[in-house]
Length: 106
Image 1: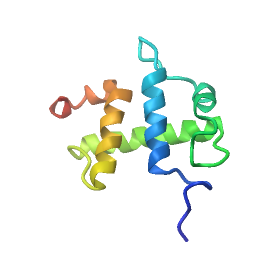
Image 2: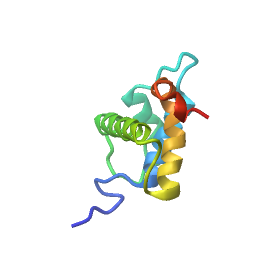
Image 3: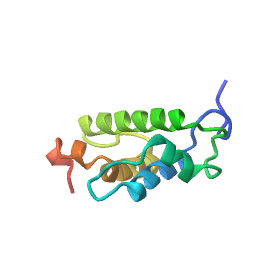
């Protein structure tokens, strides 16, 4: 049975909002916000209900893993515009990882 966005799964809009918040909240040295700060920033704005700080930390980790895999594959291979958008935002969130794949830098 498929999960419905708004319950315990993450929507595409949630993923975009999380990555955008990390970019916006990162300091000049590139330090990302803590899971608690991210939670406070996004509270009430996500489609996923009751997302706790640890849920945001896990989602961030999963998005980072997805980004690494896409880099290893030469870019997002499927998912069209959605995955391309997540990939472009991820390049802003994790420029240090992107640097390990110079052929992917634009």
